Length: 188
Image (cartoon, rainbow, N blue to C red):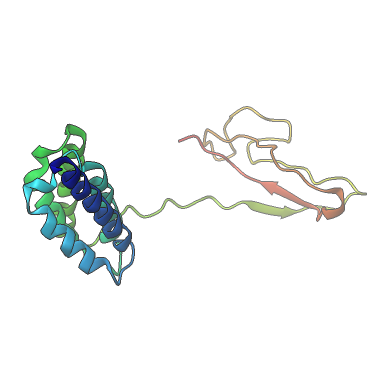
């Protein structure tokens, strides 16, 4: 009888963890769900193999959403801090993930709750150069690296290496607008 009661307890708790995980997605229900999960995680009995998968899924969701705009990152910080205290009761993989999240939240708190992201790299615009209309012929695809037949990386006119021709474009003869597309792909 004790085994069936424990099995019911495990099933009920895992169901609740799954429910909390779904509530962590919504900014309206996030604070209550995160607070309940934090309270639950202050007890080391929460950190057993029976609950580990659902607990880690809920924590991952909290980390994903709790650091976004319109979510309270301080609640997430408290949750991760509570889990960090008892991480030794989990598998090595889960303990390592919690340690990484804890460090991430520590840095986030140090930065005032704002994620510092590198500015996006500017993309080089595609140059569209009008050419004379030919009798039903398709436009010629060229690159600044050379003529339409150059497919190997070479240097462009500015002496920059890595430009290459890409002939993966398809044009319809009925949709030809007489434009030549010029582009340059740079190797990282």
